[in-house]
Image (cartoon, helix red, strand yellow):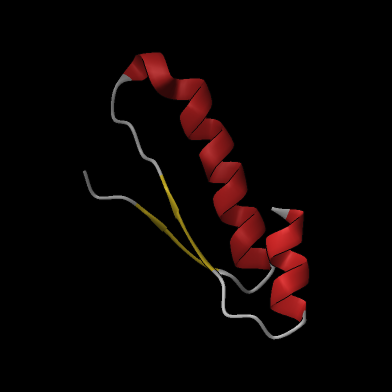
Length: 52
């Protein structure tokens, strides 16, 4: 993630698509992805959750 943020500072167009699971057994993965989502947004990187 840090490397994408550094690349963005150099002017590289970067975007991320994160997995989103609706089942409760994947809760810890979802929490990590929400943290990643906030990191990317705060660093000017386009970020989305998948819709599947």
